Image (cartoon, rainbow, N blue to C red; front, side, top):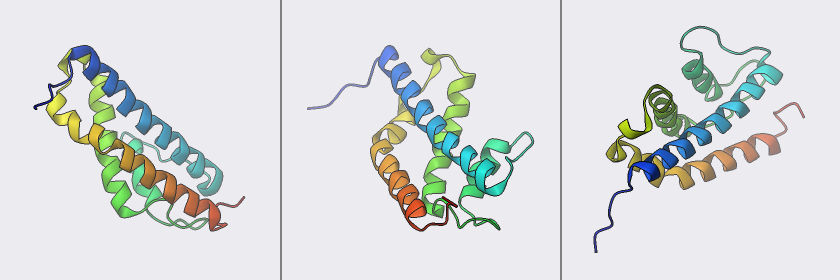
Length: 125
C-alpha cells in the first residue's frame, strides 16, 4: 500500500518542526561559542561558520560535534534558510522528506555527542 504525500498544511507543519530543530541546535552552539570560545562568528555567513566551528576544536574546547553530524546538520541549516525565505505552500515535500525521515536519528546523534562533550569535562563546567 502506497502512503500519500502530506498535504500543504502538513508540509508547513513539518517545515516548522525542521526549522525549530535546527534553531534549538544552533542555540546550543551559540551558547558554547559565547561561553567557551568567547565570541560568535560575524558576517553574512555566521550561521554556517558557527556550525563549522562546532566541528573543530578551539583553544578552549574540543570539537563539540563530529564531522558526520556537521554534515547532517548542514542540510537542516540550508532548509531553515529556505523555510524562512519561502511561503509554506512553496515548500517541496520531495526535498523535505529526507530531513523529516532522518530527524529522529539526527536528534539522537546530537544528543549523544552533546552528552559525551559534557561528560568529558571539556565544557568548562
